[in-house]
Structures are given as C-alpha cells and as structure tokens.
Figure (tube, helix red, strand yellow):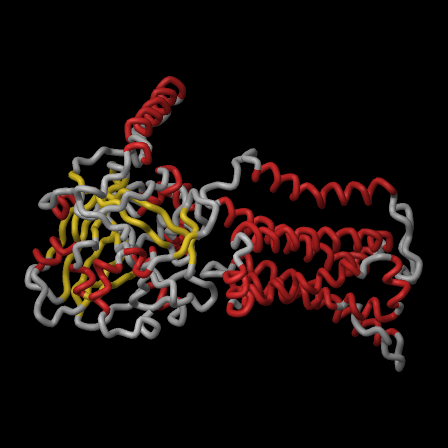
Length: 311
Length: 221
C-alpha cells in the first residue's frame, strides 16, 4: 500500500525539490525586480508567505509534483476555463478581507473573519495524491488541518447528515463567473462521515506557503480519494444539511458527475475511461487506484453501497 | 490572379501563379514546424501536461485545416477565382496529414500502443469513435487523391469525395462530445461548418433555379 505511517511517509530527500531552492529563486527574482521596476510596483499582490506547520499524519513517499506545475495548471473556472487561465487571472480573486460562515443544522454557527476562523488550529503538512476527473494526477504537499475540527466545534445537530460548501461569488471581479459555464457560485458537498474523516483536509497552503489564488486561496477543501472537482476552492460558507446538497458539476451534467465522485478505475466517466491517469511529469499512463490509493482508509465508508450506481 | 472570372470556372480552371501554390503549402506546413519546435522545448514548450497539449494543438490544427479545405469551393464561387481550386487537393492532404498526426499522438504517445486501452476507447467512447471514423474517411480520400484515381473512378470520384462533408460533421461532433463545459471553441467550428455546407446547399438551389426544368445532375458539390 502506498500509505505509510507518519514515521515512514517522509519523501526521500533526493525526491524533493528543496524549499530553499524555490525560496532562493524567488528572492533572486524579487531582487531583480527591486533594481528594475521596484519603484513602480507597490506591495506585490499575492505575495507568498511561509507558514508554520508540523509534519502530518498521512502521507505518501511519491515524488512531489513541482511547484510550478501545481500552480500553473489548474481547473478553477471562476478564473477561466483554460488550464493556464487561473494563474494568469489570479489577481481577480480578492482574498482580503475574507470571512467564512458556518451555519445550518448545528448548535454553534458563526460568521468568522478568516484569521479568527483559522487561529484555533495548528497547521500540518499532508502530502496527498490529487486525481483529476480529466485523467491527470499530481502529488501535492498541502498545509492545513482536518475539517473535522471545525465541524466538531460547530456542534452539528443529530439531524445533520451532510456538509455543503460554497465558493465566493464575485462576478464583478471573477471574469469566469460572468459566463454561464457552470451555475455560480460553485457548490460542493460531502456526507457528514466523509467530512469528518481524518483524511479530509481544510488547506490554507501548499509547499509550506499560503495558497496561491489559482489554487483556491485562502481556504479550500482537499478530499484526496475523490476526483479533484470535489475539493472546492476559496470557501466562504460551510453548511450542515439534512438533505444531500447540490454540487456544481452534478448540476451541470448529472449523468457524468455524481454526488460521491470517488476515484474509481472501474466506473468510467460516460465519455472517457478512468482506468488510467497521467501523473504530471511522467510519460506513460499509470493505473488509477481505487479511491485514489486511499482504500484502506476510506473503503469502509461505502460498505454495502453499489459504487456503480452511487458514482 | 491574372485570370478574369469565367462563366464556367469549373470546367476550365485557370492556372495559378506558381508562387501562390508554394506559398500556401509553406503556410500550411508552418503549424507542423511550430508544433515540432514546441515539442523540442522552444517557444515556451508544451507546458505542464505536454502530451495533452500536443493532442489538443494537433487536433485544433487538423480541424482548421479540414475546414479550410471545405472552404475552397465556396470561396471560389464567391470570388469567381477559379484558380484557387488548384489548392484544394493540397489543403485536403494537409488536413489529412494533421488528422493523422493527431491520431498517432493519441495512439502512440497518449495510449502508448496499449491495445486494451485503445480498444476500450474505440468501442466505448463515442467521441473517439466519431473522430476515428473521420480519420478513416480522410484516409480513403487521401488514397484516392491522385490524378490516376480521378481517371479510374470517373464520376464516382466526386461522389466518393463528397464524404469529406461527413468527415467535417464527424470532426465537429468529436469536439462537441469531448468538451466538458466551455463550448466556445466547439461552437465556432460548428458555425463555420454550417456556413460552408449551407453555402453549398444554397448554391445548388440557385443553380437549379437558373437551369429551369433541368435539375442539377450532380447535386451538391
């Protein structure tokens, strides 16, 4: 199995591009800018900030997908439908100020400024595989904390069975939201037990730094055993519900994108196979693993369910 | 360029200035050079997912080339420049070449000749099936594109080569069916194809009215 315990998951040093090299390169570029156009550039928008974090409880020793690939090849339709659009249009996303509302079937709802929402939780690093429904995958070192901490604090009522998530709606700035490619705002949902699972992460960073806008700053979901579109970006609202909440891609094309959308090589997308995937950086396709390789951790969530029906 | 519009341009195609043919060929080969350069890492390379990018770019060029081939006849009728018919075979063969490149990237690079994946796609993925069918049609047309084939097949040659309309329709369906949500590009292709095929229909109807009582024998061309 690819999942290792905490003590052994650390990637081999040779497999990681050292953070120091990235940092040095950026410093170099910033220095160059300082000489050249520094006077013309006020505070650089979306400047990268290092985060304090500890190694996390789950991981993989697979090779990390390079930072530049993780941050320039994105599906974030609010910033454009092309893979390079989100990075290009990243400054359309205003993350300051940011607030997160927690509401619905819970005893302790609230509307938090981002800082207050985040401050109780210690950050940890989780190196997860990400499998896009389109047939490509990455390995990303996320920084975040388990969603179940936030959910427990909100004290869901006995009737809460699902958790719904909502992305920011700002068509004035987000050019992608001015076109009806999807129904805006983007919404997602998990069953409560999926949301409470220790693998389910609320991420605020990657590669040790705050999330770039194109990766869903300032706060996003990461559900590593589901197709990437379930991991909703730039979250402004978390709602406990009794009924299964609507999800954006399911609303757009229900025959192709189910509520569960677990990574499953045996259930094809109606238009293309899901048996294999291309890991970014690799030439040959590789077999796609059940639950994206997290079967040991999550298969029991779906005992007795027909996964061909509940795809 | 030198030839004035003639009354029956189809029967006596004017000659094309020699340089024009070569110039169009050169322009038609530029995308191949551009793709080759990017594959070699120049001009920004192919990005994070190079094989997907190569598939998309080769497909886009193939589509544009196929639509260009289909545009020759309407353009000739519109402008009266009979000579541009002499470009039609070359543009058609270029289209076939780019569709073949697209096909080979899928077969040999993306799926790496994995027979089970290929069969899976060909039997279960409708967008792959229609794309493959379009390529088979173009293969048939390319292999009967010689002067000799025209002589041997006589009237059947133009009948056979009307299959290019089917190839165009299949190619556009291919793009529509593989699109996830953003249909802008597919819409453009569909509209262009609609105009190109629609103009033939209009032309045929107009011709039939001109020759009262005597319906055009060849139908659309």
